[in-house]
Image (cartoon, rainbow, N blue to C red; front, side, top):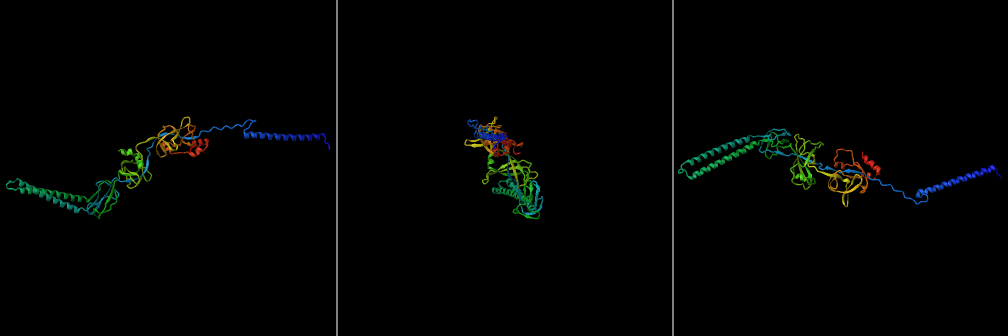
Length: 432
């Protein structure tokens, strides 16, 4: 079988084209294998593999708190009971029928005001009788005195010594009878006065337990009660710990608390309380001391026996440096905080702490007002390491340092685990 020249050229051309395609595919595979090895094992041109340089760690984001001085003489609330300073239970002192009730039940009465009248006829008659007895005794005394004078003026030869002694004795006896009659008259007058029952104090009268026509005796029970309404007393139980904290103030004669009253309806009583007295014994069962305050009560808003809330703020201020308890850490060496300087470097600072009040601790030494300490993000702080500080703000003006320390708009766990960019965003945005 023979081929023409043209057919031979076409066959040779097809064979050459196929060979070229195969060679190109092999070259591509070889190049892919080479560069893939270099990518996986870090090989380049037969040189030794090189380690990739690690990225520099970013400074952790922390929320700062600026140390300030705060007045920790904060007020506290106690449950108080309203009590009258004086309470009088009026009882009859003589027996008799009630003629008249002169007051309206529940009304305000004044000291000396007539409240009840008891039938006084018997007692008036008794007074008249005692007056007559007194007059008789006085007449007998006058006669005895005159007789004694005549005896002593007579000639001593005509009067015996025994007569004079008897005369002097009669004078003394008649004088005693006068005194006795006068005392008996006073008793009768007192009984007569008791038929008019008057108010011994000013206050609010209660119910009249006996009315007109009832026969009463000293054993009949009270006629009515009167309670003093103005001023009035409010007592509350002070825990022994609070008492010891204000012991110096209690030992003085000055006010211990600036006290106000919160009424049951939530309203604030407009008058301020004054120091009245404190109990001289501590309740052994509750460990509390009874404290009494005196309040003006001209309009009768405070009713004896009612319960109120006593808002007592120490009268003496207590300005000290404080830090939130969240910012304090402790280890075997003691308590410490992280202080951040102007170069954003966190320094470990040991501190000496005092009392814990609410959510803040009193700083006795180790910090000065104005210094910045780490409040949130403590777990990410490295001593003498850089931090990315953010000032703590909550957008609520007018708060004291102690109040700001008690408020936190940030989630500490989320803040510490989030990325630095996310931390800065969350801190800047807060919870709003």
